Length: 253
Image 1 (cartoon, helix red, strand yellow):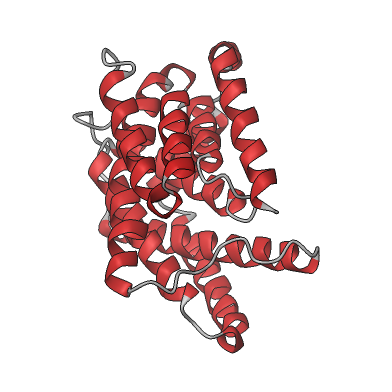
Image 2 (cartoon, rainbow, N blue to C red):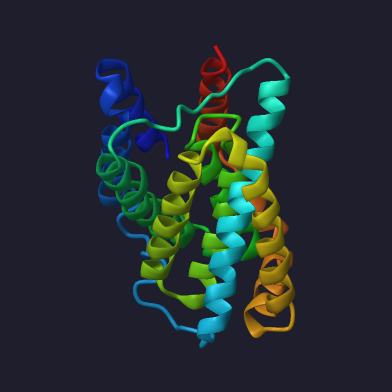
């Protein structure tokens, strides 16, 4: 993660308008040159068989939960006087589709759910939680931390259980696409959209509760191997977390 951070920072400082491209480049560099002996989680792996309705409900849960957390975090920061931290891009839709949806979904999943999660498998649920935290910190923005952590947990558990990194990439892309579409709604429609998203979240959660995927995810997230988890919190992780949180603070100004 420090490799990604170094490449991202150099790119953001030298060419701020291309920060997203440098983030993708950092993901690729970290995936290819760091921990090369580690397995790429989910390629290939033993797959558990889940139904299409389980995957559809998980996608609905991911999209609605992420959007609701984003809405609440932005509202809290706005009320606190921090203002909006994310300029919901007014670039062309095609440009945003590629650089805000497709590229992050491919390269972030390759690094986080591919390489990093593969290194954390021994901690089981602890590895999922840590991978989600590292993913959230990549966004270097307090407004994005809550929904990025939630999305990280869902995507990490999904790849861990389903054994398919490409499903993680697809769900990440669709989640980003939904976020992009919602960000372009007029402010007057935001509260109505939030209400509909809350209904979608509750409906998907109710539909999933009696399904094998939900039971497996609940068991996985509760199976934290404390010893392995603590061992993984090495100085590099703390350094990365401190640097990312510093960037979050700077993002407020």
